[in-house]
Amino acid sequence: MTQVNLAQAFELAAAGRPAEALAIVDRGVSAGDPQACYALGLWRLEGAHVPRDLGAARRLVEQAEQGGLMLAARALSAFVAVGTGGEADWPGALGLLHRWVDRDPLAARQLQLIEAMDLDGSGNPRGAFACEPLSDAPCVRRFPGFFSADEAAFLRDVAEARFRPALALDEQAGRFVRHPFRDATAAAFPAVFEWPAIHALNRRIAAASGTEAGQGEPLQVLRYQPGQQYRPHLDAVPGVANQRIWTMLVALNDDYQGGATVFPEASLAFRGRTGDGLLFRNVDEGGRADRTSLHAGTPVEAGVKLIASRWIREHCPPPGEAFGQHEVLSQADEVGQ
Ligand SMILES: O=C(O)CCC(=O)C(=O)O
Ligand SMILES: [Fe+2]
Image 1 (cartoon, rainbow, N blue to C red):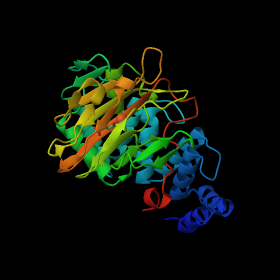
Image 2 (cartoon, rainbow, N blue to C red; image 1 turned 90 degrees about the vertical axis):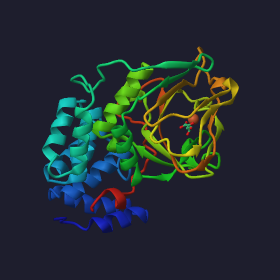
Image 3 (cartoon, rainbow, N blue to C red; image 1 turned 135 degrees about the vertical axis):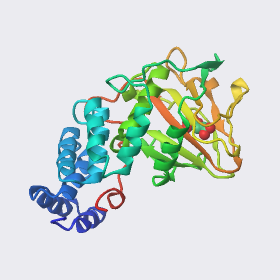
Image 4 (cartoon, protein in one colour; image 1 turned 120 degrees about the vertical axis):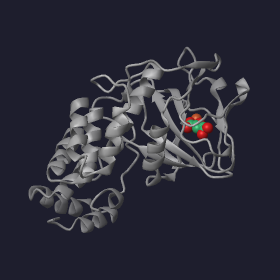
């Protein structure tokens, strides 16, 4: 039972009255209200209305989980798997899934997927992956069957509720904006949604690219309807300090026409079967944007294309920070159902 009027708090926050909103949420937290703890936890995570504090975010979400809030349990499993606001603890993350398996179908489905993965005690893949070089300049590699059919289906399903217009980074403004060169919709999985199964896939992407999982920006699922495309672009961002050095794309379906990923400078076109991965390097030896990595998703002609995409930076974000802060959470969506 919610002991304070959180809907009113969200309305006040949206109306630019954060102090009053915070007063309501704080009263709820003091009374031990799980929904209020979760709401303040997300604000702490995002630095919305209060200073960003990942440690405080984790403690608040933990309190909400102990109060029995399923959304908080999902977020906490992500924090514990990834190490957001505290230690990364893979067995602890699995323990949370087991604790919720009878109450949350998402926990049950993740456990099934994770049991089918061959992982070590930290959630890293044990085996190597089939890998086929497609080009040296730019460096492009194909990973056949990189995700299983069940993993691809899982990502398609969890993305469904999360699609928003795809955004592109506006370097001048330093923020993400809608952009005509990318008219697909995207579902992103930032810290709060990097649940254990998604984290394990991110660790697999890290292993395949020789990077740390923490170097990746939030995994995204892109959805292209007929006519939609991603025009030719570089994933490297001019002038940015922590460059996007690799991109991994994974086909989540293959029942559509058109929609190939093409590299015009290398005369290369990729149309993956479900689960196939494509890894390419965006920078040259000196770490500068590699013009030959120019690529595009050509227009889909029929059906719907779904693809997972992860941009990998040169370094992890500084301690206490996380990529994906731009994903301002819509409180009405994520809290209080
Ligand atoms: O959808 C595609 O084929 C391309 C996607 C892409 O370029 C990206 O996610 O950076
Ligand atoms: Fe791209």
